[in-house]
Amino acid sequence: MADVDGNPDAQIRDRSFPIKTTSLVQAGNEPVPDEMFRDLIDREWIETEAAKRPKVLVKDDALQWDLRLSDLVMIEVENYQEQPTGHRHEFVDLEVPLAITIRSAVSRQRVWNVMAECRRITYRWMLAFQPYQVLYFDGFQPDYVGANQWQGVMRVRLTAGTIPVIGRFITGEEDPASSPGMFPDGVPRP
Image (cartoon, rainbow, N blue to C red; front, side, top):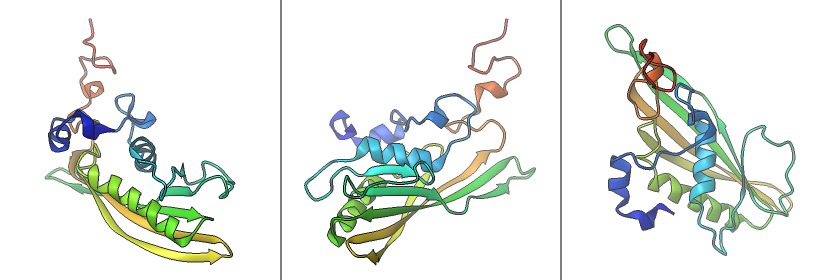
């Protein structure tokens, strides 16, 4: 989608392509990492014969899904870690590991193809995942579930260093709502 708009590195560095999710639409909302990754996969998926578009969910979004309709990609946050840094602990280092479970009733090869597309998206957008600074691909573990059911768990990790504790915002700059002379949407008070 974004490849036709110019050099991807220039797009990432000028921050013209933040991933818009419902948790980041309003200033001051805490970013939800699994929701951000779900929206990124939905937005950037390139459907091919080998990897059809799967149903992408955050864990506990739906209770049941028929794997005969399409493959399933389920994303969950495993162990959110926040480490205070700075002289007065005014900054924080974040590390958010995500487990992406891929399930298919088609074949073992389909699980690998869906994982390869998710990995391509991860590598393509690893520097643009705001407010996180780096998105790591940590590996993939395939598993056989039963008759005509295959799955694998792909692990990615989001990291960010020295983010301000108060007034986090998607650009990494201070939130306009934290200024006493501004309304929450950044408009100056009369």
